[in-house]
Length: 171
Image 1 (cartoon, rainbow, N blue to C red):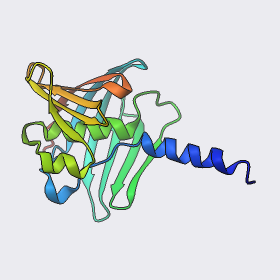
Image 2 (cartoon, helix red, strand yellow):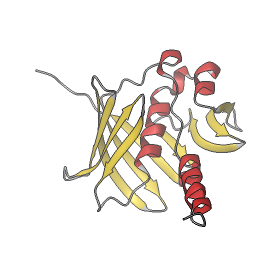
Image 3 (tube, rainbow, N blue to C red):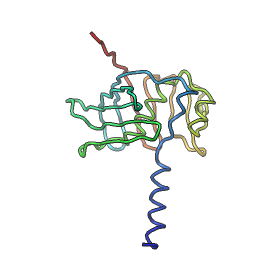
């Protein structure tokens, strides 16, 4: 058993290092869009997902549906952490990173250094000063530009996401 301990520890550390850090809600503007169409282009192909965001007593639940309405993943964000139930057929970008990027995209015009710091990130202008990028240890994790305001990039995931916010009418 002792010879497996280093491998298990390495696996846990690797898994934790690849999980995005969400900002502390009390210091950040809220991401309020209840639904969005996320058109994802990555090295895994193209996917269109309709994502619904629903706050509840425990936290926030996200449900992502494909073009024919089949559930691709359900994610729950609570103060204790983030859990994802994923369809075995889903082959897209990691749901945590996709939702994390959508969250920052919704706050793109209201980003603050204090908010970004709560997630352990650095906020930098893009090289052309037309947008923002979020970095950890000098590595770009998220990028947005005013020249393409409906998109964000996840460089570490090799993905570009186009967002269209959907209105939900309650009758």
